[in-house]
Length: 141
Image (cartoon, rainbow, N blue to C red; front, top):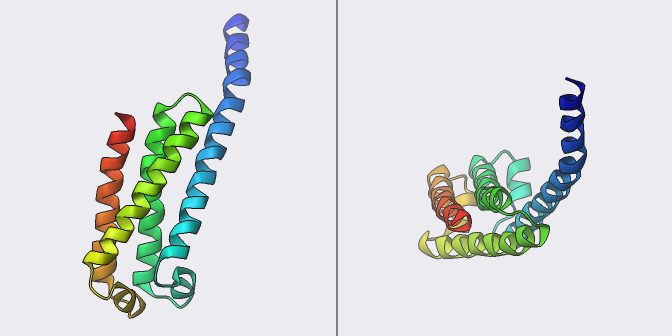
């Protein structure tokens, strides 16, 4: 019994540092992705959220989830930090491109989000999440 417990502790001691480093790298990629996203959007999500604008909150939350989905797939399928970093950057770039394309398809996105148009926000989030799921499947390949 003690040898089983000892082997569990050994595995934990070996695996936990790797898990924490990989998790930290993935969370850092998510933070960078969100920071870049908030810089390239034509509206100020933080201000809109602070003002209680539901459309602004929905687009920001949807973008965070849409960035996290392919990053999670990368984390789940990669064994090396460099792998996570490289494919994570690709995943973030693809999601940002999806946002850029969606802004071209939704007429006057800035005005609609700033005026609180939840339908436009939901459409944007739908595009981002759809691309995120496909992106994640490609990453998991």
